[in-house]
Image (cartoon, one colour):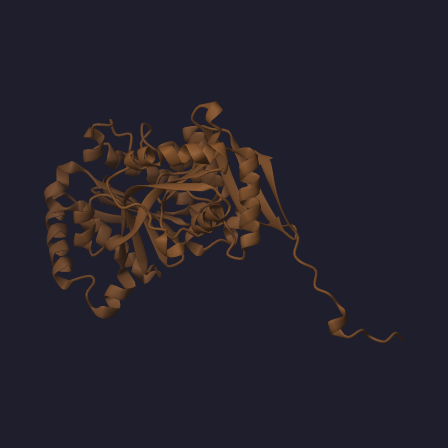
Length: 373
């Protein structure tokens, strides 16, 4: 029998990491997304594939591995004139355009991501995305340390509703609000029988048709852009969401609520649920019933149902802050667009154009890096 060696006789070798660029969307995106912050686990392969199918583009994916396990997956598509050498992260505008990064990823792997990115593009656009995004923040810190120019432009403020906190404090929902909603429901019922429908997973494709029918009778159909911002119509973003639900895991994170009157769709709410966080993607209503607030009535039913199912926070994103404040949401993180410009001549030129980039956004504060210097 050989004598066993003492543990201190062994040397722990450093973990080996590498970065590589793959043509197309890599299936490793799903592996990384499963290990990402819970708020980002919807950033799966099919999320990006749906964006390519709906909006176009040919993807490449930078994958960073540690000990053979993927910890970062950054899909990107060429943007703008070819000579510019610019790429952007694809996806849906809302909740945000970002990429999955494992919560175990370390600065060494982020540095490798940047080194590979530098070989592939001159400029990378990430966003719109909220301040505090894990992958974004890790990239900002590493890029600024390595001579990259990092520019932001303000898009809007997001609004977040703390349902769990409000319920615990007895401040949400207000009893007066619930009373008013019952009043509206009573008047809606004079038009026919009310029914409430909830859909997730494989029930969503059929539900999307009902949501589109509502949008076609809503204010958004008469908007100046011809209804292109509608989420479920053929002229809007319907192709994206119908492609996204081809992934059953992703479809299980999506949930919709629908109010019908005598079987006809009148109002809907649609969300992405990841753990205790809900991203409110869209809600709308048939303008015929506007004076009875069918959207508000359905929203509260959907929110309370979500609260019962473990949803604590609702991120409403930007826009219509009056409505969101009335529902109880408060201003939260800023939403920004970001440019990462590689060191060298490109970075020097970017410094001269920084003001133009920021002015191309909306009025709002630039990110303050003084405390992080």
